Length: 599
Figure 1 (cartoon, rainbow, N blue to C red):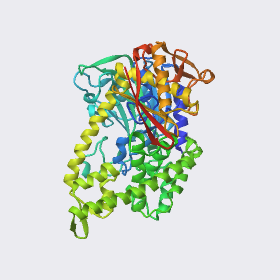
Figure 2: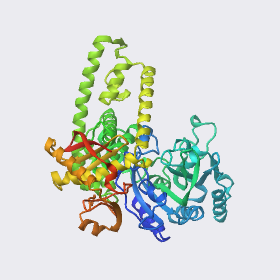
Figure 3: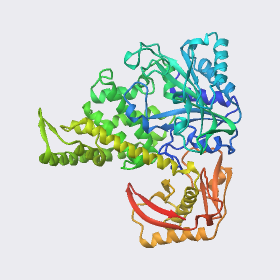
Figure 4: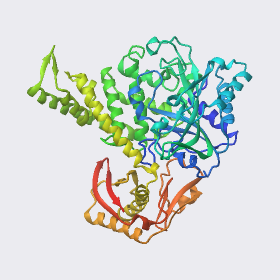
């Protein structure tokens, strides 16, 4: 039987034999990249190289990347979506293109994984405005199917940009200027299950009924969005392939439900034991518990703690949804499930077993906080109800306004509010949700535009300033202090670090003065690709417990700061002009936050 670990090993070996160099799994929380909260694809850390920068490992790369996609949270509960997943990836940075990529992946599926030919289907790009229909990929697939003894007529399908175009921002019209993207070709596996007519009159490979499952996507990253909205060809034609490990496993085991595969099944059985409920009778609740606890374990092992902002907010949301569904099923001991998760992933991700106590403590603490939150929320509702409520068949009716306060302030979902014995006008609440989501989307757009991806002058200045700030903090507070997070926009920079007490005014002043002194010296800034061991010896700041490749990229700010980073940076510190700390905050769990402005 092919298990998850075997698929990883086969995949890496297959592409290494074809000249690819394995690169490390990047941290789940991106380092020095404020454009996104989590690493959500294997290509995310490789954007500079897709745009033309030379990679130290060469033009042909392969890896397995831990990923998290927050946008999938609301889809959890079906038979195929997971928020956390492992992405098998291979890349060509101008080394090879469509013919090699499609041929190799096809060979991997039928010869290494022994998937039946007749169950494989592919989609190809239909075209978009001035970007042509991908007949080249169509011809390659036709030849591959014919040579394998299959009539390609009913195995190749065309779709538009909404399905067969890939960029970090989605469809072409949503891409910001400077963002790379391109057409893609997806491979689907047919489980041959009956079509559910509620998803449409007829079934097709992109149907949501679950009969077909996408198991791999070859992106031909050859375009870059321009300020005018048009696209130009990148200096090199790239391949960016991603294949979900969990979905490949489902295909290998012919399990339409990914939660019934050998990876998830022991976790599902543990949930059944702890809830005394059968998976077949409560599939949605059990899937939510399994998925959310797995993702939470990986987040906590990567240093994320529950909070009301950014990564911490996503973790809090996951844990509370897991608690709710566990309570709904009358669950007993949730920590037995955490133990099973650590056991299931220990061969590929031993960090969960190594950091089990830390994970357990964080979940225990959040569970206690959540119970108190529910009590406060109920008290708030009771107070509101006494002023304006009505009774409806024994259920207390509150206004949508009061319900939305509970959602936005206390973090309770509509279902959580109703589980406390209250109801409200769903349409009015939905309207407030739409207004809130519109603001969130606007904020997210600003976050993306203000991040490193835009290469704006102010953003790059702020990014370099964080290197100076990091070293200055270590100079004043000690080398045991290190960065735990950052966010840089055109308006300000935010820097998180481990420290368990408030900085004094004198310490803040010393840090600020040190940074400004280095700015005034107009120190040169450059990077070097050097061996990992050498980077350690010279004292470069980096997360050495992560898996780094043999050659690492270190940015030098004069002889003052040496730090692992992907860039970009100013050429010399004088460009920054000045640096001012505007406030500090306690963000809990022994961490502080500094806000500052530059220029």
